[in-house]
Image 1: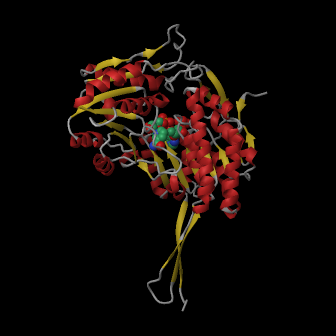
Image 2: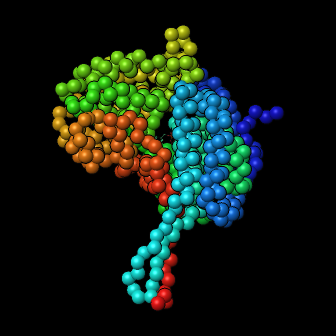
Length: 483
Ligand code: NAP
């Protein structure tokens, strides 16, 4: 029997016969699975099948669609341990964090199962005699969803759940580094009994799949999470077709700690905001700015805690820092550290590849949790997305300077503020250029509030009622002759 995990096309698990993706376990460097792929013609057929399924799916009540979403959530919940292990195997993240990702995935499904029922329109008072006006919301149509590897399941479902709730069929393309959990999701969809063509899993060449999604008029929208670079490419490719796009792109989040903050809470929050998911999060605190009066005390505590974070295989009990996704990710992070040090930065802890006391990590892509001080302005770790457990800490004097440093980037996904001054919270909330601002909160994302980027971090919002809006058209129905 073949060990190739199948795709899910038009209600069936199939191997369309393309060269399989070899999935690498980043803790060991070994192959941990193989997944089937589909070519561009296969994606075209999948879009045709989604198109055929569209009328039936949009014709169901939101209540019925919600019931399907709840069944998917139940099917995932029954397999939490197994699917969490799959995520840890292909992504490397510590097992408790994989379980957390599944928990949030299930919450997204259940939340949008309800929110689908609130795709309200409105009745607008007439200006002219005899007229009446309605505004209604209808599903945009088949959606192509392209997902990244860093939160391989939850970020895919942040797209699929609201699209399905809105009445849109979905074609999901997972990242090639992490397609195994997407196969498990397709199994849950199948178990939930969704009609054929309503959800499909396509994997293979990103360029081919994206080209078909972009150029095929029956694929009405693309929703993408990934790098700003690819987001730009998708916008350019979609321009001739005026392709509807939602883009969740790169981040470069500042984390600001003010002298009036609870220092222990700020250190604990920084550890989470920076080192969760091994720093490979779009909302990771990339730059830590600390007010001068508490800078040294903050650094001392942060270094003590960061240096103590256990590194290793995500299956090892107690591990908090797993591997980076691949060698390129590790090399890029080491290059950021090296460049900062060459410019005068001091490595306060970490700074090197981790291979383990007995060489157990020698084939994996591990980096020691790293804290840097004295980082020169303009260093790459302060201007680019490092996507690794590297925390550059920089002092600032005033609130105005902190705002200016925080906003000095083309990105605008997330920001974090540690302070107990209510007036400051308002000023920063209004002035920081970021889609999500955590105030004494290291994990702001939640199913019921919008998430997305300002500036070059993206277009549109996921989650919350805005997450459903992203898959709805707004239509005006105008009536005359009503005297
Ligand atoms: P990526 O290289 O842009 O890949 C993301 C997805 O796009 C993958 O499925 C990838 O497929 C596909 N892709 C690659 N090249 C493409 C192309 N030319 N056209 C269409 N699709 C293409 O990003 P990544 O390295 O996986 O993820 C890291 C980035 O995502 C970071 O910048 C991070 O900040 C960002 N991110 C943003 C958010 C957010 O919500 N704003 C969340 C998480 C991550 P293959 O895997 O097959 O190449």
